[in-house]
Image (cartoon, rainbow over all chains, first blue to last red):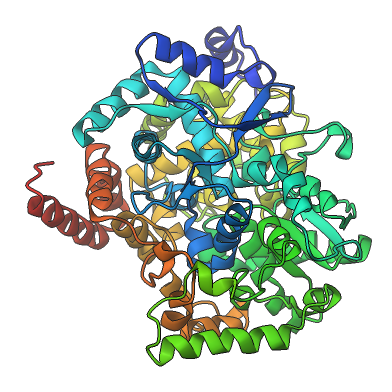
Length: 396
Length: 244
């Protein structure tokens, strides 16, 4: 085929000059400049914060308390112990928070799966949630890795494209809300990383005999990569520090494996309607490689889709005699267990598919006794003694 | 634009002749029209800078390991404005992408996954066969996210829907209401949505779907679903005295 010189010339004329913005972006500074121009409102960090470093050295502050929990559809719906562990750890550290009902999904799982939305809708959904947080006075903390990544994309689009800002501002005006974005977009795993030493100080279970492999979530560190936390003392600063940082702070042994950069196989639409791909990728490229190269007790990850995929994909592979069978937890559940959380009342491990019991046994947890305690709780609900369990019940 | 016709398939290993392709051939002008919609998206210029042909995006891509799929071909076809190949990709390739964005490892700063996001939107907006095919079985998800504001709900965990997820899925389904009431977070006692979403919040979400044209997009791929959602949203807004 002939190389289309004229088409390339036209393209070049429109694309040059180009600067790769990935290493120089400072979205916080750009937001504050837009606020100064009256374009939007920036919700400020207004409480004690921990300063961490991002991939290219920009400092990012993580507010410790008074947080607005932007929950995750997949966590709340299918692996609820993920969410409850985040809340439980925050409560144990004595930091206040708000768990809002004035919150929708980011809707990005659907967007990346079906494309039945558009950039204006996605930006408006994001800003509506941020406005709800702003109105509450609590600072947003994002539970889902995809929400976190997508909201960073939305922030980039709003910063770069005034026409999108105008469109979203008009929609927000119809909702009676301002165009507002937070000073930093913060993922819950960044909060766990920033507070890992405070968490470790409350540790009651010994994790030193536990071998861990970490799956870093694509939408955490690949989407708008410059915003993810890196630390020169963790992987020499060549991989994101979250998850690994807290696992090491809790005394677990983190082992390396060769396919760490691979995604889990979630695929957004694939996990729901084309799972042959998801199961194959999750087991052949992740679980089996981890088992062969690191033989861990547990896989830790930090996103809704990754926990779901890596946990749920192993059952069918067992039927084919594959080398699978690894517990999969979020690092929030792992940290909660280290701090003494109940495996069922708090971590809700009965919602998981891969066998987590060998891990509990290695931690010295009598899971049969714990399950009996949880069954006792359920009987209280069944006999009408209580309608719901609450936070006092889970620590009883 | 590159002008090609069927004989191109004899010399281009990536290009399929209409008689072997899994989609209907359309006039060249129609392909140009669709590509112009892709290019018109304000994000297109942020996602495509050129291509070194280094293949890093392919090496990083999970879908490339399991399908005849290449993020590099997507970036190159768009950069060359090869409307025939772009159209073929919109009909055959784009729904295989995992949207993990591993391809952002591109040293040139390209975002092939982002280009695919745009191409998918154009495929949906124009009711392309590939979009309808890809979204078969997906209507319930779209209904759930657009109507409840949460994407997956506890009551979707059924043994017949997820037989490959093991017997634990049936345990969840059998004990769903009880296990949800045992959750200590009071927003999470729900079974038909991920958490309890306030009525006022849902009304605001419905307004967003209507104002941005996101709901209209559904009409091109599933008219029945669109009608159901439109009726639901208009009725709810009418109750609130809101004229969208």
